[in-house]
Image 1 (tube, rainbow, N blue to C red):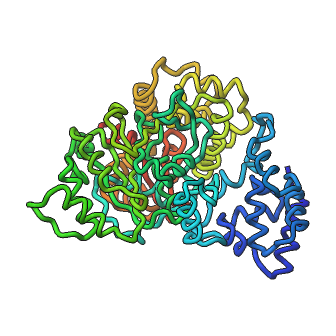
Image 2 (image 1 turned 135 degrees about the horizontal axis):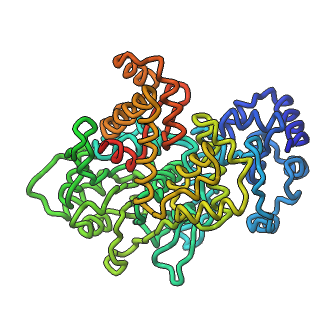
Image 3 (image 1 turned 30 degrees about the vertical axis):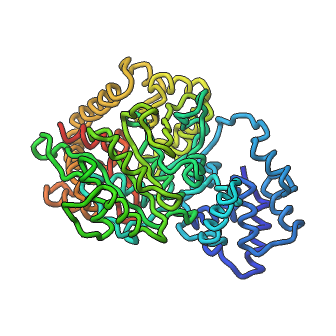
Length: 531
């Protein structure tokens, strides 16, 4: 579908102001490609709020002119509060499963710029804090697309241990790495349980009722992805300006030996966590100091700052309750904590101002459609076969995909890629397994397929092993890095074919399509390194 009227009107406004599409992209906070698609009529802004952002960027203040833009984009002409609430309810639009790539929604498909919006983040934060001090809801609503702009870690003083690895760093620095689903999260302290969106988690962190969020689920559900999105949203709102914390992971698999290898964890107990934060804050390490003094020193050093403390892999620490209690003594309205764990302890053990959030499997057809639509757009450059899915998705196929994968997001992505390569009948041949058992079975099948592909397949296996080895090294893996590997093995001519084999069978993340910035999920890194 083409949106000629909106594109013509937008082009007229830009021409009158002698502005370009790239200028508009920077002002609104989207990629230049998205703004160009608006101008060509390929897509329109996904929400009326985005249209209003465009109007503000262009300096359009007259209600008639704003309404003209809204109408041209296909939205209601009233911009009053009642109309906004009506639009928020969704107007009961039917589910459209017959899309094509050209009609992908811009907020899902685009890669937003990290530039701040027209309203300064300082003003945003001031409005939020002012509302909470008065015991009211924030004066400024959190936008639904909050957090899509990356956090540039080179601007942080954070010294990451090898335990974090390049995967989570990539989540923070990569654009378009998240899609928000309606039924994705569930508050653990709600009775009966209620589903929420990630912006609701941000809302709770910005309130005085919650300072610590614990994200709990088993592997492959996207805890790290959600955590990265929340952190990026806090930065975008100006509610955070420094990241602290680390991972407790202490073992990986050595790619060369195929055996467990110890790495230096960010922390392994409560005292180690004290030391880690003090190191990141440049505080001297002292052996004879009370926990209260540790806490006081950290809070004093963070005076006037807005910090988010991220604690990853808490389940690997025996005394995890001690770390959570320590966090409860450190957090404040300006210092918040975000924790991920595979094993959440009893809610009665949580200190005050702590909320448990469970990640739920994808069971809703609409959520599955949105998720796969995002997956197709995110990875279609690396794996063009994914575009086939856009022509064959329907409610029956989605329901079957949810059934065989249990709604586990990572499994859905891998299985969907195999369906694109083969056919939907592939689902009938899957083993009757769920969770990690099915995930490892799929990895083993793909690994055997590489072996059967001859020299290019064996070269692809070696690439995966090398990526797994570098997962916790902190070194960026670029196209030049890969060319160096293949040249050293005298197999440079096999690089394109080997990469194609990997893209079609595994979830290979490339954060930079021009220079290359490769990473793989922790589960794939551990599997490959054992082979």
